Amino acid sequence: MAALSVALAGMAAAARAQPTPPHTKVSLLAETDAVRPGRPLHLAVRLQMEPGWHTYWRNPGDAGLPTRVRWTLPSGFEAGEVRWPYPQRFTQGPVGSYGYAREVLLLDEVRVPASPVNHEVRIGAHVDWLECQEACLPGKTDVSLVLPVRAAAGPGPDAAAFAEARGRLPVSDPAWRFGAATAAGDVVLTVTPPPGTTVSDASFFPVRPRLLDHGKPQRLERTAGGFRLLLPRDPNGTLAQHLDGVLVAQSGGRTRALEVDVALAR
Amino acid sequence: MRSLALLSLSFVSLPALVSPAAAQAVVGQKAPAFTATDTAGRTRSLSEFQGKVVVLEWWNPQCPFVGKHYGSGNMQRLQKEWTGKGVVWLTVDSSAPGQQGHVDAAQANALMRERGASPTALLLDPDGTVGRAYGARTTPHMFVIDTAGTLVYAGGIDDKPSTDREDVATAHNYVAAALTEVTSGRKVSTATSRPYGCGVKYKS
Image (cartoon, rainbow over all chains, first blue to last red; front, side):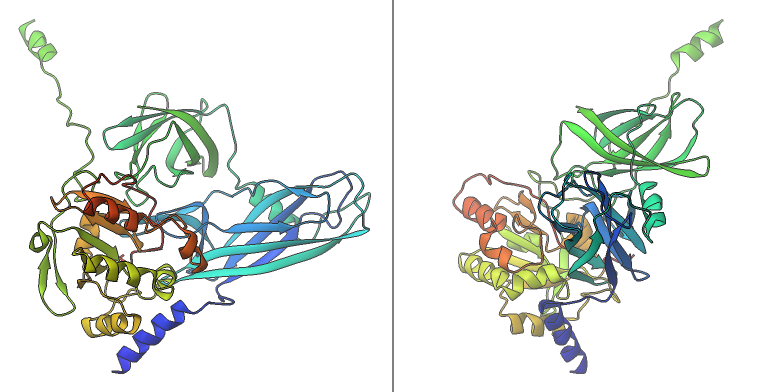
């Protein structure tokens, strides 16, 4: 009977709104200590997850929800798209998801008008996320910061974190060549790295949620020019004209994250 | 010379590059057979329901996405309406022992009673056999099988992936649409969609 009450309480708890899940700390950071008129302002939403907890990438994979940021900006300011550092994959049996453990900075660049109205600006962000460990809990919070408007600005206290996060953004590098085609139950991504680059391991993270089977392993096969990755398809998914996403490759002890966007040949 | 000729005639025959036939449910094909014990202790199989429309609903009582659909009464309404029309509704729990959402028969029955849920049966699948056969990835993850045993729908319950109850009223419910079509002999117009929810808590 005690076990029954616990189970019922657990389910009732899950059904109640969770005001502040304690497993992710969210903060709003600015790279500089001031806003310069007419110059881009670099911001980040930092999510710090407790050990064992993770939040999700722009494509969460099989389960989960991507973190969402909605900005409240002063008049004339305009935010770009959130830029996502490369994720990692979490699997549980056949279920695969994409996201982040420990910490992630979601970067964004805000266009600042040449003549902002005030000497000081307040920037707000409403952040929604899903954090999962064994349990999954939805989270939401409002974070804000206030910055002076000045002709000159120096690095803010979190500038180093921005540099580190930027290093984790996927890059578009024309020295890497990609091709994609379907073959039986797979999408085959052909990769030709720049000459002299040896890749010891690689994995691909798709942007589209319904193309690939996120839980099945990706097989790497060497080719004369580089390698190919066999990416199992979702049998109940949808094919697209393009394969877009991020290739994370280990090369020379470094991790390279490359943007991929190629036509998908049938 | 002759040995060379023989060598040139020999070749390696490559195995067909087909992904292994993972026991996965594919829309348009025969729905995978299964057998599982329900919360009344009875053994149930898909074959038992031959000739009926069958819905499979993957469930985890502690998942906030399941909480959205039960807390809003959405899932219970669907279960009541469609079992009332002769559809077989099977709720499935594939959480492994020790994992979130794993419940025994008594707990499951109590939870269903408390929520006013009325599936035809709730199947306990702690080994994940039924889940893996169907490729069930989320809770909820929904499947609809027609009277000929063909899988005609696989995917999300609706088109608003969130944990917000307010989204239920404005979402397009794929399962209701598929059931309306299949029970009136029509082709299911949206046969797949993105399943969303917590990951099914298989043995890891």
